[in-house]
Amino acid sequence: MKKIVYYYFLLLIVVTILDMINDNIDFFMNLFIALFILFIIMIIISYIEKKRHPDEYNQRLKNREMEKALLLLVKSKEILKVNDSIILQGSGQNLKNVNILYKDKDLCSLAVYKKDYPQQYQMLLEKVYQIFNASSFQDGNQPLEKKEDTKALLFSDEISEIDRFNDDIPDETVSNVLDECSTHLKKLQQLLADYPQENDKIKKLQQHYLPLLMDILEQYCKISQVSGESEEAKEKLTKTIDLVNTAIQNITFSLSEKDELDMNVNMNVLEDLLKKDGLIDDRLTSSMEELYKKIK
Image (tube, rainbow, N blue to C red):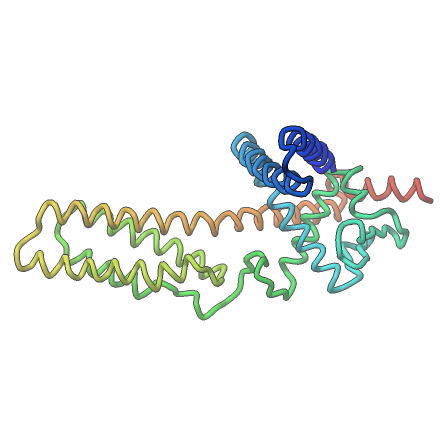
């Protein structure tokens, strides 16, 4: 809300300045120019925030994903039971339209709870996200869900081919980068075996990049058999395989970021179990109890 007010006043200032400078341009043209300038400023501010506080920026992105999942879940169920005492109820349009019920007592909206109890709200958000993760939603933004899948053995043929080429190519430098390529593909394969999903980068890797690499390796082997291994061809091949290795690593890393989010959710599930058994303090329930007493 503070950012909206800030940008509103900034827009008024820019429009006023433009109106003073451009006497020959009407108000609506000045407004359009001001909006464009404001849009550029917002992009710059967002970029600076991302660079200066990457952890906070990434956490905000994760929270947006979890809030979207929460609203989707509430919208579909209308009444969402979080645990034995806590229920979320509402239309699911936004946080203001979702109310928290504790011991069947209407406490407040999620928007108010987020403002007054930010840490406890984070715990509630991650708890609901775990429920969403275990649900049967097949939305495009759904987190990775571990399950059996016929696509679990992606890249098996490609790994076998790379290992075969590795046996045929005697050069140690090329052999080392092919070993790395095979290792990276096996890691990605295992990740997709645990968390199968559709991904454009994975499709391009399987359908375009790797087949092209196989053709290059095939051509290199044929040329080497006829005229021997040239240093220039060997150097270019090594750089090419290194580039493919980097691409595979980047794809694996991008998928692992979601795994990290799921791990954090699972840690909160463990914490919930400990709280349920009365082994640690339950700040979430304590905040609900506090609100409950105030209303009661």
